Each structure stands twice: as C-alpha cells, then as structure tokens.
Amino acid sequence: GVAQKNYMNILERVVQKVLDDQQNVRPIKELLQTLYVSLCGLVQDMGKSVLVGNINTWVRRMENIMQWQQQLDNIQINRPTSTGMSLTDLPASLQLNIMERLSDGRDLVSLGQVCPELGALTEDRLLWKRLCQYHFTDRQIRKRLMVSDKGHLEWKKMYFKLSRCYPHREQYSDTLHFCTHCHILFWK
Image 1 (tube, rainbow, N blue to C red):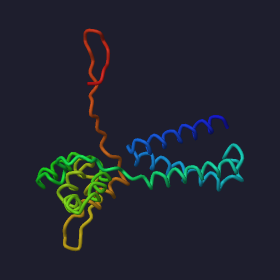
Image 2: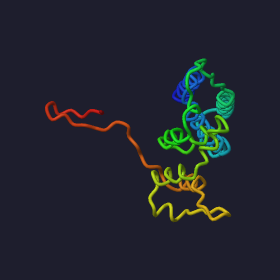
Image 3: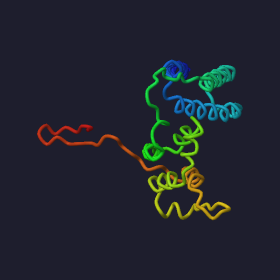
Image 4: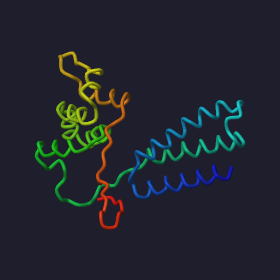
C-alpha cells in the first residue's frame, strides 16, 4: 500500500515537472497510457484478487491518471518570442538533411504537423526509405513490402509496420572508453 502510494506521488511530481517544463511530454503520456491500460485489466480482474487494496482506491488512482493524461493533452507549448531564423527559412534540401538525422518516425510525423511546408517534406519517400534501412535489415524489409496503387513502395507505412514487428536499432551518442592508466571505464 505504501509503495503504491509513493509510486503515485512520484508519478504526480513527474507529470507536474513535465507540465511546468513543457518537455518530454510524449514519453510521459505513453507511460501513463500503458499504466492506465494495465490497471484497467487488473481492476476488471479484481474478483481474482489480482490487486492489493481497496477497489475504490484503485479507481481513484485511475481517475488521477486520466486527469494527468487530460492535462498533458491540453498542454500548449509556448512559441519563442525570438524573430530569428527558423527551420522553415532554410532551403528544402537542408531541411530534409536535418530530418534525416531524426531516428524516430513519430518525430517526423510530429514535425510534419508543425506547418504545411514541413508536412510536405516529411512525406518524402526517400526520407522514409532511409529511416527503414537505418533501423531494419533488408530481410525484414523484404518480408513487409507494401506497394501503393501506383506501384511505388510505401516506405512510411512500411516503417510503422516494421516498427510493430521488430525492435529499432539501438543508438548511443556516447561510447564507452577504457583508461589504460587508471583502469576506469568512462563515457565519452
């Protein structure tokens, strides 16, 4: 009981931090959604003594999770007041080059929702092809080929289909090094 209460308190603080900072909204929303779905299944199985504690307490916790999800859904990211250069001011080829550095298709979809110009660029088939080739093997791609009515490969649809079937390639921004003098491992 106490551990569950502490967990919910920590979760509430995390949600409040995300609301205050307006950063890392998506991972917390995904965490809350996963937790909510799990709790729904457990509450429905309450007759089987799956959960410890009063059912009303669990229902209240689920209501709290729903309230936090609603708060995160309603978050309005404030635009910076700077009148400097923005991504859309760059040439389209440079914008595509930057987009190729994104390793998560969900980030590309979100970027495409910012404005119509970026939306058109994020539909670039070559961009999605490279993303598929980065994360998945040729064999995995061949197993999930999707062709449009016009005979083109549907790279964007294939990416999301492959994402559901196979894990993404892991990437590390830092590498592990070993100091030969002091025999210590460190990230660089």
